[in-house]
Length: 240
Image (cartoon, rainbow, N blue to C red; front, side):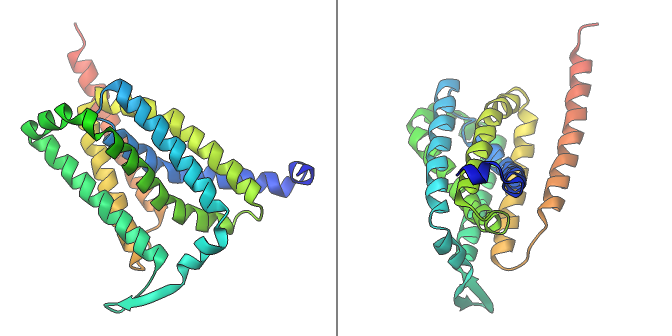
C-alpha cells in the first residue's frame, strides 16, 4: 500500500481515472436532477443521498469483479446481424430506459395536468426514484469500469477514483437540481440531454460508437445558448 502512495505512475492513473469518472458522471447528475424534480426538497435531498450511497457501494462491489465485468464484452448471441455481448445488452436496455424516461417527462412538461398529478403522488414514488438512480448509475458504471481497466492496474486506485467521482456527483447534484427548479426551461433542455445520451447508449450497444466529445460539446453549446437566454430574461424583468 505504501508503495502505491509513493509511485508517480499510480498518482497519474488516479488523476486520469478520476477525471474520466467525473466527466462520465455528468450524465448521472443530469438524470438525478430530473428524476428528483417532482419530489419535495427534503425528499429530493434524501433520494440523492441514499441513491448515490447505494450506487457507490454497488460500483465498488463491481470493481472487485473486474474479470467478470470485462468478460461482458464477449459476444453471447447474434440478433439481426449484430453480435451482442452482455455489455451491449446492458447499454441498449439502459439507453432505452433513458429514452423512455426523457420522453415521458417531456410529455409531463407539455401536459400540465399530468405534472400536477405527478407532484401529488411524488412522496409515494420516493423508493422508485432511488431505484432509478441506482439502476442508471450501474448502467453507466459497467461502461466506465471497462474503460478504467485500461487506465489503472490496481483496484485500490479504481476504488479511490470512484469514491472521489461520486463525491463530486453528490456535491453537484443539489445545485444543479436547484438551478433546474429555478429555471423551468432548463428542465426541457436537461431532458433533451437525457434523450441524446439514451440514443448514444443504444447506438453503442449496437456497435455504432458516438464519441462522447461530440455529445458533451453539443450539451455545452446548448447550455451556453440557454445561459444567454436566462441572462436576457433577468435583464428584461429587472426593475427600471
